[in-house]
Image 1 (cartoon, rainbow, N blue to C red):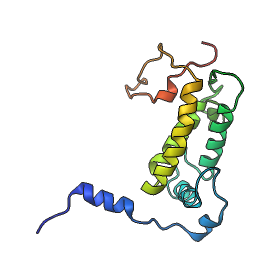
Image 2 (tube, one colour):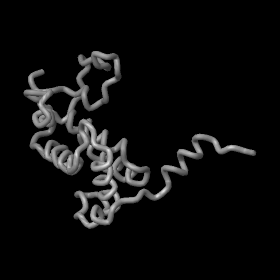
Image 3 (cartoon, rainbow, N blue to C red):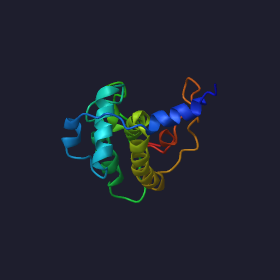
Amino acid sequence: MPRRRPGALRAARDLQPHRIATWVREIPPIDRLSRETSAAVRHAEVTHPGYHVRSGSAEANLHRYRAFLRLPGRKLRPTRSECPACPGCQYDDIAHVRDALQDVLMILPLPARVEFRRLLDALDSRFRSRTLPDPWLPDTDWLGEPLPWWHRRVYQGR
């Protein structure tokens, strides 16, 4: 009997409609996202809590990211957080905000992930154009894991 390839099974699973509670669909949508994607984001925040993912965190972090990009001046320099271990203060560093948005992106179902990725790509292109890459920063963290591009920007005080 022929068997289905694992990739075909994963693709079929990702295309199935996910059950989202009706109360999540009644909440006003997140700015610049459709009602369905907003409901999927809120559902993912509740069902997959994590280090950066909590209820309402995606909307708050999108607001922080946009607020940073609206700052005056041609070139922006992010600031490091005073206390990066503190759950509230770490989001003063825009790289941690972008980490949190990436975590939300990774837990979304495929249709919502595409729309959320489109929104992030537009914001990321503005972020890349308004900040400078730092050639002196290493490409990996202290564990040897590669750092995302948004961690390798020129910060204030450099």
